[in-house]
Figure 1 (cartoon, rainbow, N blue to C red):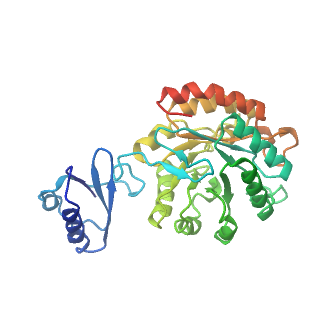
Figure 2 (figure 1 turned 90 degrees about the vertical axis):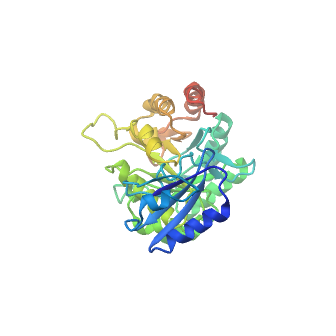
Figure 3 (figure 1 turned 90 degrees about the horizontal axis):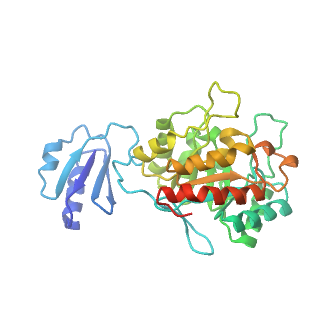
Length: 341
C-alpha cells in the first residue's frame, strides 16, 4: 500500500500516522521524500487496513494498493529515480538520474600489467569505473576460473594507479571478507536467484550490480533486487545482459524492451551489458548505442588489450581503441535522453 502525503506536512503528524498504522500488526512503514511528493510505503500484511480510514487523515493526499509482489523496488513506492553514489578519489560517481556511466575492463583479471594497462586506457577514453573478474563462473570445470583473491589485489592495485572504483563479481557469501575494499559488488546472471547470497548482500552497505538471469523474467529480477533491499541495502543497480532464446546467431538475445519496462516499473538504475548479450565484439558498439537510445543509465563493456589471447571471453571483448570509438559514438544517444556522459 502507498500513502501519498500532502505537501508541507508536519513531521510529527507523519510519525503519529506511521505509529498508528504499525500498531495494527505486521506492517512496516518506509517514508520516501521525493522532489514532487512525500510517500509512505507499507510493507507487510495490509489486508486489515482500510483505505478510506487512512485517506480521512488530514495529511493524506491519496491511498493506493500495490498489486506487484515487489515493494521496495517499486516506482509506485519511490516515484523519483534512485541515484547510486560510488565513492572515488575524485568525488562520488553517480549512477542513475541524469548521469550515464560506463563501466569497462577485461572479463577476467589475468596479470598486473594487463589490468593496469586496460584501466589506464578506459579511463582516458571516459570510463568512470573499472570492471574485472576475479572469480569466474564457467560452464566448463576445466576453463579458467579466475585468480580469486589475487585478482582482487590486482584490481585494487589498478584502482590505486588510476583512481577508478572497481566492480567485480562475487560467487559465494563466504567470499565477502575479500570484498571489503571492492566498490561495487556484482551478482552474475547465474547467481541472480542465489537467495542466501542476496540476503547476505543486504547487510553490506555497498552498491550491488544485479544481473538478470539467462532465463528470468523482469519480475523475477525485481524480486531478487527486493531480497537485497528488504535485507537492508537500498543500493541496487539492475543490469540487462541478454537472455537465452531460440536464436543461435548471437550468444544471447539483448532484450532492449527490458530497459523502458524496468524504468517504468522501478526507480532503480538500469545498465546494459552488450558484451555478454551478443558475444561478438563487432556488435558491442551498435548495441551500446541502442541501449543509450532507449534510456539506459549506463553500460558495462568488456575491454581487453589483446582479445585474441584473452583467457576468458576474448570473442566478445573489444580493444581499447574500439572502446574509445564507442564512447564517442554513444555520446549523442546519451544526450538525446537528457543525460550526461
